[in-house]
Length: 460
Ligand SMILES: NC(=O)c1ccc[n+]([C@@H]2O[C@H](COP(=O)([O-])OP(=O)(O)OC[C@H]3O[C@@H](n4cnc5c(N)ncnc54)[C@H](O)[C@@H]3O)[C@@H](O)[C@H]2O)c1
Image 1 (cartoon, rainbow, N blue to C red):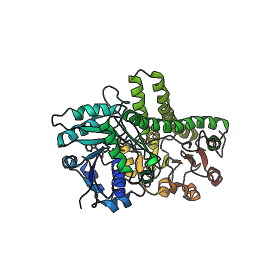
Image 2: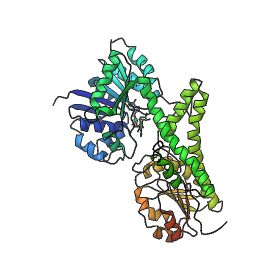
Image 3: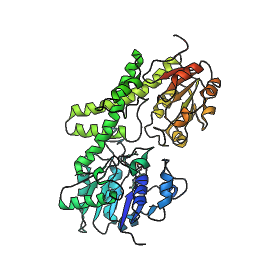
Image 4: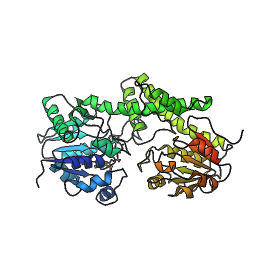
């Protein structure tokens, strides 16, 4: 069967895989190919054991794979054959040179642009799917359009707003789809080609068009605002712990104000994920480079509060467990940065586990989906850490349990059974405020939650 259009996506990660699976599912008239340099990842995308866990993903991949959705390592062929190329390669924080620890590392993006140029035989639309610093499109235009073959590349910005754990739901029914381009006739034409793809399932009024710089900057700003809400509520959680105010009650009360709204007000051990910290630091770096120091400091404080909240959690464990955890077994319930994903990038659990291991605790990690990633994250610790899929076994003989991911499975455990199997006095630190603290206290636990007065069976 002939296809109306060939769409390519370079980068088969958490964004490229699910977004292209959704496009293929909703647009059977297009051939969608996802390519990556990582052979193992492509092999996994072509198997029954996909490289990422995301609810609903298996099903949509299975329905389209081999029909109009293909995963491949043949980057050259993919580029040659396509009319529209999405690029969703990683854009991590730079670890070297100027801007190290803050600026986005654009080497993967630039390499991809040069590959597109090398293997293209005709003009194409190149879509920025990765999150990029504002004005990246301008650099890409320069690289791509300085060619002697007479080809013209239009750069369109189409940032991805999906959240891991709910990616399929978000892609199927997005709050909005943002598509930005140059406001020239060629730019608008390219933008419309991308709009046309989404119109296959997204209502017209949810597709926003803008200039390319607004689109690039909106993605960074959206992540900065989301993270800022978490840091704001977390900063207040510390005050709650000192004053017997309860952070969940405060969040509920302020969230009823329609100007504030109830979402993203859940206090916790801190935000994680590959994006928030990196995107805010990228924003900070851009502001600094334009001499906007006040703006830079304002957003930087969102990351500072998040680091502080994670450190505070470890400090709180230590001080409540009689100022020493050396030789004590501590079970960490959840290592993923949030529920319903196996992704552990920037997970607060990494810092908490490291903090406890530095204090010579015996840490046991349990998680329904993230144990393999957890092993990689903690590989520098040759001793003191073990991994256990069963939470009951993880907690057996432990002095404390720390809940660090809001997996539903942890709400449903038999905590009486867990309590009985632990060393007494048994401690429970709820870093996600998901458990019934009063009930746990009545069971016998000493309970420490975020932004709440501790429930202790002894005074000291
Ligand atoms: N993960 C999220 O929730 C999320 C959400 C929205 C936006 N984003 C943004 O999307 C982008 C991708 O994020 P991700 O989480 O999917 O990253 P990822 O690391 O999971 O995937 C990126 C993929 O690109 C591949 N790659 C790198 N260079 C390549 C090249 N030259 N040719 C072919 N493949 C190459 C890598 O092998 C990797 O598989 C980032 O800019 C990120 O900020 C991520």
